[in-house]
Image (tube, rainbow, N blue to C red; front, side, top):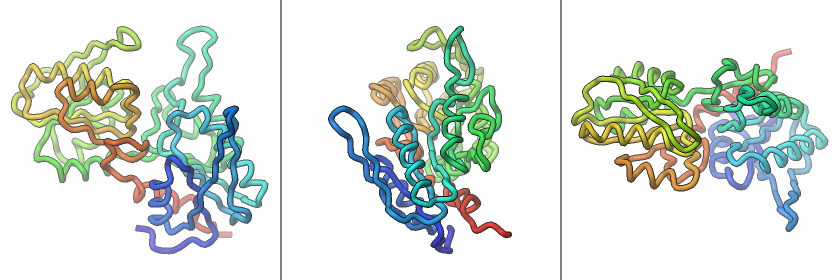
Length: 304
């Protein structure tokens, strides 16, 4: 818990993430204010910020459904600078466009690099959680600001699981999930394994489970982000053949587009847990303490 109140910093939240931003401001000991947004009939946005911000401003907005949010964020950052802010930190618990990190077909935009460069023109520091970095291993290589902090939610997940069930087996639905599964398993001394995924199309995957004893075990599928949910769904269907005691899902970022959550329950998943990085009905784990510690490092008065 950050106890000292930082009077030289203001955290500005946005309407769809107000509750989480207010909790973060309280945990970090930073004053809070709303960014007022009005949407005109033609789709344009009007942004209004507090008139006299301090030199350090924190913009807190998670970037799911990012296209309109990104433009409004740039309008807010530019306005904060015009009003006197000297240093702008972006807290984006979910950072968009990180998955498109290479051109898979000739002529494709490498969105990670383009969006990262765009953000770096308007902010001075960045804090996010479990950014989906695959071919790029450091956040600052995707978003060239200093510092660029990519926090791991695994400690929060580990603490949560310790209170939920005894000795579950953790299963990663694909190789990219290994780092999250392994970190939680190591912390809680749990069994874990990682499945192999073969993508057959945008809506279809084939999952191969490792040879281990799933019967009558509580199983938790762990991943960083759930979007369509097809990989989690297929993994759960494969697991039900072994008659486990239960199957649950634990993810950092709950996108769950379309009817993903309904399909997961139909596939045999009893519990779906997520952090509040993206507002969703499955939010069970709060990230404000994790974010507050990082924010304190970014906004503490610098020694001369």
